[in-house]
Length: 380
Image 1 (cartoon, rainbow, N blue to C red):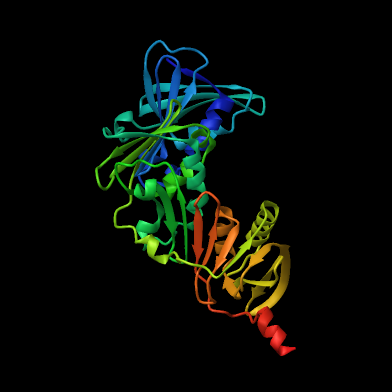
Image 2: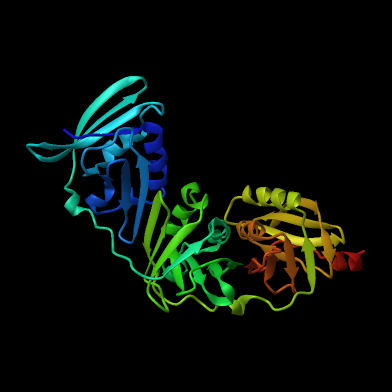
Protein backbone atom coordinates (compact mmCIF):
# COMPACT_ATOMS: atom_id res chain seq x y z
CA UNK A 1 0.00 0.00 0.00
CA UNK A 2 1.33 3.42 -0.98
CA UNK A 3 1.23 5.98 1.81
CA UNK A 4 2.08 9.62 2.32
CA UNK A 5 4.17 10.70 5.30
CA UNK A 6 3.49 14.24 6.48
CA UNK A 7 4.68 16.19 9.51
CA UNK A 8 1.67 16.63 11.79
CA UNK A 9 2.27 20.33 12.43
CA UNK A 10 2.46 21.01 8.68
CA UNK A 11 -0.78 19.13 8.05
CA UNK A 12 -2.53 20.94 10.90
CA UNK A 13 -1.33 24.33 9.69
CA UNK A 14 -2.84 23.63 6.27
CA UNK A 15 -5.92 22.13 7.93
CA UNK A 16 -6.58 25.34 9.89
CA UNK A 17 -6.49 27.25 6.63
CA UNK A 18 -8.92 24.77 5.07
CA UNK A 19 -11.31 25.16 8.01
CA UNK A 20 -11.72 28.85 7.17
CA UNK A 21 -13.96 27.61 4.37
CA UNK A 22 -17.18 26.08 5.79
CA UNK A 23 -16.88 22.91 3.71
CA UNK A 24 -17.87 20.66 6.64
CA UNK A 25 -21.34 22.25 6.69
CA UNK A 26 -22.10 21.28 3.09
CA UNK A 27 -25.22 19.20 2.48
CA UNK A 28 -23.42 17.24 -0.26
CA UNK A 29 -21.51 14.38 1.44
CA UNK A 30 -18.58 14.50 -0.98
CA UNK A 31 -17.93 18.16 -0.09
CA UNK A 32 -17.45 17.19 3.56
CA UNK A 33 -14.31 15.36 2.44
CA UNK A 34 -10.81 16.72 1.85
CA UNK A 35 -9.25 15.83 -1.48
CA UNK A 36 -5.59 14.82 -1.18
CA UNK A 37 -3.40 14.69 -4.28
CA UNK A 38 0.33 14.12 -4.25
CA UNK A 39 3.16 14.46 -6.71
CA UNK A 40 6.67 13.31 -5.97
CA UNK A 41 7.46 15.84 -3.21
CA UNK A 42 4.23 17.57 -2.18
CA UNK A 43 0.69 16.82 -1.05
CA UNK A 44 -2.15 19.16 -2.00
CA UNK A 45 -5.14 19.44 0.34
CA UNK A 46 -8.30 20.73 -1.35
CA UNK A 47 -11.67 21.63 0.17
CA UNK A 48 -14.66 23.01 -1.68
CA UNK A 49 -18.13 24.44 -1.33
CA UNK A 50 -20.53 24.89 -4.24
CA UNK A 51 -18.86 28.17 -5.26
CA UNK A 52 -15.39 28.24 -3.70
CA UNK A 53 -12.39 25.92 -3.91
CA UNK A 54 -9.27 26.15 -1.71
CA UNK A 55 -5.98 24.27 -2.06
CA UNK A 56 -2.94 24.24 0.25
CA UNK A 57 0.42 22.60 -0.52
CA UNK A 58 2.38 20.57 2.06
CA UNK A 59 5.89 19.18 1.71
CA UNK A 60 6.16 15.40 2.09
CA UNK A 61 8.66 13.80 4.46
CA UNK A 62 9.48 11.07 1.92
CA UNK A 63 9.11 11.36 -1.87
CA UNK A 64 6.40 9.22 -3.43
CA UNK A 65 7.12 6.77 -6.22
CA UNK A 66 4.01 7.71 -8.18
CA UNK A 67 1.19 10.29 -8.08
CA UNK A 68 -1.61 9.58 -5.60
CA UNK A 69 -5.16 10.81 -5.09
CA UNK A 70 -7.80 10.00 -2.48
CA UNK A 71 -10.49 11.60 -0.34
CA UNK A 72 -9.98 12.14 3.38
CA UNK A 73 -13.34 11.60 5.14
CA UNK A 74 -14.41 13.99 7.93
CA UNK A 75 -13.55 11.54 10.74
CA UNK A 76 -10.04 10.98 9.38
CA UNK A 77 -9.48 14.72 8.94
CA UNK A 78 -10.47 15.38 12.56
CA UNK A 79 -8.19 12.58 13.76
CA UNK A 80 -5.23 13.98 11.82
CA UNK A 81 -5.89 17.44 13.26
CA UNK A 82 -5.60 15.96 16.78
CA UNK A 83 -2.23 14.27 16.20
CA UNK A 84 0.71 15.30 18.38
CA UNK A 85 2.31 18.29 16.72
CA UNK A 86 5.83 16.86 16.76
CA UNK A 87 4.78 13.52 15.26
CA UNK A 88 4.32 12.14 11.74
CA UNK A 89 1.06 11.24 10.01
CA UNK A 90 0.80 8.45 7.47
CA UNK A 91 -2.17 8.12 5.14
CA UNK A 92 -3.07 6.35 1.95
CA UNK A 93 -5.89 4.73 -0.03
CA UNK A 94 -6.84 1.14 0.68
CA UNK A 95 -9.47 -0.91 -1.14
CA UNK A 96 -11.94 -2.80 1.06
CA UNK A 97 -14.79 -5.22 0.36
CA UNK A 98 -17.23 -2.34 0.92
CA UNK A 99 -15.44 0.04 -1.45
CA UNK A 100 -12.75 2.76 -1.21
CA UNK A 101 -11.04 3.11 2.16
CA UNK A 102 -8.53 5.44 3.77
CA UNK A 103 -5.82 4.15 6.12
CA UNK A 104 -4.54 6.66 8.67
CA UNK A 105 -1.74 6.27 11.17
CA UNK A 106 -1.11 8.96 13.79
CA UNK A 107 0.11 9.54 17.33
CA UNK A 108 -2.20 11.16 19.89
CA UNK A 109 -1.08 11.76 23.45
CA UNK A 110 1.99 9.63 22.78
CA UNK A 111 -0.12 6.64 21.70
CA UNK A 112 0.04 5.19 18.18
CA UNK A 113 -3.36 4.98 16.51
CA UNK A 114 -4.12 3.16 13.25
CA UNK A 115 -7.55 3.29 11.65
CA UNK A 116 -9.28 2.43 8.40
CA UNK A 117 -12.09 4.75 7.30
CA UNK A 118 -14.65 4.29 4.53
CA UNK A 119 -14.39 7.03 1.94
CA UNK A 120 -15.65 8.06 -1.49
CA UNK A 121 -14.11 7.89 -4.94
CA UNK A 122 -12.09 10.89 -6.09
CA UNK A 123 -14.22 10.94 -9.25
CA UNK A 124 -17.08 12.34 -7.14
CA UNK A 125 -15.08 15.38 -6.01
CA UNK A 126 -15.62 18.46 -8.22
CA UNK A 127 -12.68 19.01 -10.59
CA UNK A 128 -10.64 22.20 -10.62
CA UNK A 129 -12.33 24.57 -13.09
CA UNK A 130 -10.20 25.73 -15.98
CA UNK A 131 -9.60 29.44 -15.71
CA UNK A 132 -7.92 31.33 -18.51
CA UNK A 133 -7.91 35.08 -18.57
CA UNK A 134 -5.87 38.19 -17.77
CA UNK A 135 -3.67 38.01 -14.69
CA UNK A 136 -2.67 40.70 -12.20
CA UNK A 137 0.01 40.62 -9.51
CA UNK A 138 -1.44 42.18 -6.38
CA UNK A 139 0.70 43.09 -3.35
CA UNK A 140 0.13 41.73 0.14
CA UNK A 141 -1.02 45.26 1.06
CA UNK A 142 -4.21 44.67 -0.95
CA UNK A 143 -5.07 41.76 1.33
CA UNK A 144 -4.55 44.00 4.38
CA UNK A 145 -6.88 46.59 2.83
CA UNK A 146 -9.40 43.85 2.07
CA UNK A 147 -9.50 42.79 5.73
CA UNK A 148 -9.90 46.43 6.77
CA UNK A 149 -13.09 47.07 4.78
CA UNK A 150 -14.61 43.56 4.96
CA UNK A 151 -16.43 44.02 8.33
CA UNK A 152 -18.77 46.51 6.64
CA UNK A 153 -20.16 43.84 4.27
CA UNK A 154 -23.77 42.78 4.80
CA UNK A 155 -24.67 39.46 6.41
CA UNK A 156 -28.31 39.67 5.30
CA UNK A 157 -28.92 36.75 2.91
CA UNK A 158 -31.73 38.73 1.27
CA UNK A 159 -29.13 41.23 0.00
CA UNK A 160 -26.73 38.77 -1.60
CA UNK A 161 -24.93 41.33 -3.75
CA UNK A 162 -23.79 43.05 -0.55
CA UNK A 163 -22.55 39.79 1.05
CA UNK A 164 -18.98 40.46 -0.04
CA UNK A 165 -16.41 43.07 -1.06
CA UNK A 166 -16.65 44.99 -4.34
CA UNK A 167 -13.44 45.11 -6.41
CA UNK A 168 -13.63 48.11 -8.74
CA UNK A 169 -11.05 49.38 -11.27
CA UNK A 170 -12.53 52.85 -10.80
CA UNK A 171 -10.17 55.61 -9.62
CA UNK A 172 -7.16 53.34 -10.12
CA UNK A 173 -8.61 50.55 -7.99
CA UNK A 174 -11.03 50.50 -5.04
CA UNK A 175 -12.28 47.99 -2.48
CA UNK A 176 -15.78 48.71 -1.15
CA UNK A 177 -18.09 46.96 1.33
CA UNK A 178 -21.46 48.06 2.70
CA UNK A 179 -24.51 46.77 4.53
CA UNK A 180 -26.66 49.85 3.94
CA UNK A 181 -25.89 51.38 7.35
CA UNK A 182 -22.13 51.73 6.94
CA UNK A 183 -19.80 51.77 3.96
CA UNK A 184 -16.05 51.19 4.01
CA UNK A 185 -13.81 51.87 1.02
CA UNK A 186 -10.10 52.13 0.30
CA UNK A 187 -7.82 52.57 -2.71
CA UNK A 188 -6.03 49.33 -3.56
CA UNK A 189 -4.22 47.49 -6.33
CA UNK A 190 -6.94 45.35 -7.91
CA UNK A 191 -7.43 43.56 -11.26
CA UNK A 192 -8.17 46.32 -13.77
CA UNK A 193 -9.80 44.11 -16.42
CA UNK A 194 -13.19 43.70 -14.70
CA UNK A 195 -15.22 44.56 -11.61
CA UNK A 196 -16.66 41.92 -9.28
CA UNK A 197 -18.02 41.22 -5.80
CA UNK A 198 -15.98 38.61 -3.92
CA UNK A 199 -18.10 36.60 -1.42
CA UNK A 200 -17.38 37.13 2.27
CA UNK A 201 -16.55 33.42 2.65
CA UNK A 202 -13.68 33.87 0.18
CA UNK A 203 -12.62 37.12 1.83
CA UNK A 204 -12.31 35.29 5.17
CA UNK A 205 -9.96 32.74 3.59
CA UNK A 206 -7.81 35.48 2.06
CA UNK A 207 -7.33 37.02 5.53
CA UNK A 208 -5.23 33.99 6.56
CA UNK A 209 -1.46 34.58 6.81
CA UNK A 210 -0.79 32.03 4.03
CA UNK A 211 -2.33 34.59 1.67
CA UNK A 212 -1.48 37.90 3.40
CA UNK A 213 2.24 37.16 3.79
CA UNK A 214 3.09 37.41 0.09
CA UNK A 215 2.12 38.93 -3.24
CA UNK A 216 -0.54 36.98 -5.14
CA UNK A 217 -1.35 36.38 -8.78
CA UNK A 218 -5.01 36.95 -9.64
CA UNK A 219 -6.63 35.40 -12.71
CA UNK A 220 -9.96 36.79 -13.90
CA UNK A 221 -12.57 35.02 -16.05
CA UNK A 222 -14.89 37.57 -17.60
CA UNK A 223 -14.51 40.96 -19.21
CA UNK A 224 -16.61 43.89 -17.99
CA UNK A 225 -18.02 41.71 -15.19
CA UNK A 226 -15.89 38.91 -13.75
CA UNK A 227 -17.52 35.49 -13.27
CA UNK A 228 -14.74 33.60 -11.51
CA UNK A 229 -11.57 34.70 -9.71
CA UNK A 230 -8.46 32.78 -8.74
CA UNK A 231 -5.91 34.00 -6.16
CA UNK A 232 -2.77 31.89 -6.09
CA UNK A 233 0.86 31.64 -5.07
CA UNK A 234 3.28 28.71 -5.00
CA UNK A 235 1.68 27.19 -1.90
CA UNK A 236 -2.00 28.23 -1.86
CA UNK A 237 -4.82 28.71 -4.33
CA UNK A 238 -8.36 30.05 -3.94
CA UNK A 239 -10.90 29.88 -6.77
CA UNK A 240 -14.25 31.59 -6.24
CA UNK A 241 -17.36 32.45 -8.19
CA UNK A 242 -18.38 36.08 -7.88
CA UNK A 243 -21.71 37.34 -6.55
CA UNK A 244 -24.40 38.14 -9.10
CA UNK A 245 -26.19 41.47 -9.26
CA UNK A 246 -25.21 45.11 -9.50
CA UNK A 247 -23.35 46.70 -6.61
CA UNK A 248 -24.99 50.01 -5.60
CA UNK A 249 -23.60 53.39 -6.64
CA UNK A 250 -21.59 53.76 -3.47
CA UNK A 251 -20.17 57.21 -4.30
CA UNK A 252 -23.61 58.77 -3.80
CA UNK A 253 -23.63 58.15 -0.03
CA UNK A 254 -20.30 59.89 0.64
CA UNK A 255 -20.83 63.49 1.84
CA UNK A 256 -18.90 65.97 -0.26
CA UNK A 257 -18.10 68.37 2.59
CA UNK A 258 -17.79 68.49 6.37
CA UNK A 259 -18.15 71.30 8.88
CA UNK A 260 -16.01 69.82 11.65
CA UNK A 261 -13.25 67.26 12.18
CA UNK A 262 -12.00 65.32 15.19
CA UNK A 263 -8.55 63.72 14.94
CA UNK A 264 -7.48 60.87 17.22
CA UNK A 265 -3.90 59.77 17.86
CA UNK A 266 -3.18 56.06 17.11
CA UNK A 267 -3.17 55.17 20.82
CA UNK A 268 -6.61 56.72 21.41
CA UNK A 269 -7.91 55.23 18.17
CA UNK A 270 -7.00 51.71 19.34
CA UNK A 271 -8.30 52.21 22.89
CA UNK A 272 -11.66 53.54 21.70
CA UNK A 273 -11.99 50.61 19.28
CA UNK A 274 -11.34 48.14 22.09
CA UNK A 275 -13.90 49.86 24.29
CA UNK A 276 -16.52 49.88 21.53
CA UNK A 277 -15.93 46.21 20.75
CA UNK A 278 -16.73 45.32 24.36
CA UNK A 279 -20.16 47.01 24.29
CA UNK A 280 -22.87 44.38 23.77
CA UNK A 281 -26.64 44.37 23.42
CA UNK A 282 -29.19 45.17 20.72
CA UNK A 283 -30.21 48.45 22.41
CA UNK A 284 -26.63 49.60 22.97
CA UNK A 285 -25.68 52.99 21.50
CA UNK A 286 -22.80 55.46 21.55
CA UNK A 287 -23.21 59.22 21.27
CA UNK A 288 -20.35 61.46 20.20
CA UNK A 289 -19.88 65.03 21.36
CA UNK A 290 -16.96 67.44 21.63
CA UNK A 291 -16.89 69.43 24.85
CA UNK A 292 -13.63 71.27 24.15
CA UNK A 293 -11.19 71.71 21.28
CA UNK A 294 -8.92 69.01 22.70
CA UNK A 295 -11.24 66.16 23.73
CA UNK A 296 -14.02 63.90 22.45
CA UNK A 297 -16.71 62.40 24.68
CA UNK A 298 -18.36 59.07 23.96
CA UNK A 299 -21.58 58.43 25.88
CA UNK A 300 -22.58 54.79 26.20
CA UNK A 301 -26.35 54.37 26.23
CA UNK A 302 -28.53 51.34 26.92
CA UNK A 303 -32.33 51.15 26.64
CA UNK A 304 -32.52 54.91 26.13
CA UNK A 305 -30.43 55.83 29.19
CA UNK A 306 -26.84 57.07 29.45
CA UNK A 307 -24.83 54.60 31.53
CA UNK A 308 -21.18 55.60 31.01
CA UNK A 309 -19.05 58.36 29.54
CA UNK A 310 -15.53 58.08 28.15
CA UNK A 311 -13.42 61.12 27.33
CA UNK A 312 -10.37 60.84 25.05
CA UNK A 313 -7.80 63.42 23.94
CA UNK A 314 -8.45 64.69 20.41
CA UNK A 315 -7.89 67.65 18.12
CA UNK A 316 -11.27 69.25 17.42
CA UNK A 317 -11.81 71.73 14.60
CA UNK A 318 -15.23 73.29 14.00
CA UNK A 319 -18.66 72.82 15.63
CA UNK A 320 -19.28 69.12 16.27
CA UNK A 321 -22.96 68.04 16.37
CA UNK A 322 -24.11 65.31 18.74
CA UNK A 323 -24.36 62.03 16.80
CA UNK A 324 -25.74 58.71 18.03
CA UNK A 325 -24.27 55.56 16.45
CA UNK A 326 -24.23 51.81 16.82
CA UNK A 327 -20.99 50.84 18.64
CA UNK A 328 -19.97 48.09 16.20
CA UNK A 329 -20.39 50.45 13.26
CA UNK A 330 -18.18 53.10 14.86
CA UNK A 331 -15.63 50.37 15.69
CA UNK A 332 -15.56 49.38 12.00
CA UNK A 333 -15.00 53.01 11.04
CA UNK A 334 -12.11 53.42 13.49
CA UNK A 335 -10.51 50.30 12.02
CA UNK A 336 -10.34 52.22 8.74
CA UNK A 337 -9.22 55.66 9.93
CA UNK A 338 -8.75 58.09 12.81
CA UNK A 339 -10.03 61.43 11.49
CA UNK A 340 -13.78 61.90 12.03
CA UNK A 341 -15.59 64.27 9.65
CA UNK A 342 -18.94 65.70 10.78
CA UNK A 343 -21.71 67.45 8.86
CA UNK A 344 -24.89 68.39 10.69
CA UNK A 345 -26.80 66.24 13.19
CA UNK A 346 -28.60 64.35 10.40
CA UNK A 347 -25.61 63.76 8.13
CA UNK A 348 -23.49 60.59 8.07
CA UNK A 349 -20.21 60.45 9.94
CA UNK A 350 -17.19 59.91 7.69
CA UNK A 351 -13.97 58.53 9.18
CA UNK A 352 -10.91 58.87 6.94
CA UNK A 353 -7.25 57.85 6.89
CA UNK A 354 -4.24 59.46 5.24
CA UNK A 355 -4.15 56.86 2.42
CA UNK A 356 -7.54 57.78 0.98
CA UNK A 357 -9.55 55.10 2.78
CA UNK A 358 -12.78 56.00 4.55
CA UNK A 359 -15.86 54.63 6.29
CA UNK A 360 -19.31 56.23 6.18
CA UNK A 361 -21.63 55.52 9.13
CA UNK A 362 -25.30 56.45 9.15
CA UNK A 363 -26.44 58.05 12.44
CA UNK A 364 -29.30 56.62 14.48
CA UNK A 365 -32.43 58.42 15.56
CA UNK A 366 -31.52 59.72 19.04
CA UNK A 367 -32.82 57.66 21.97
CA UNK A 368 -30.33 58.88 24.59
CA UNK A 369 -30.67 62.54 25.51
CA UNK A 370 -27.19 64.04 25.25
CA UNK A 371 -27.00 67.80 25.24
CA UNK A 372 -24.55 69.57 22.99
CA UNK A 373 -22.07 71.94 24.69
CA UNK A 374 -23.96 74.89 23.18
CA UNK A 375 -27.30 73.70 24.60
CA UNK A 376 -25.78 73.12 28.02
CA UNK A 377 -24.28 76.61 28.01
CA UNK A 378 -27.68 78.15 27.22
CA UNK A 379 -29.30 76.08 29.98
CA UNK A 380 -26.84 77.48 32.52
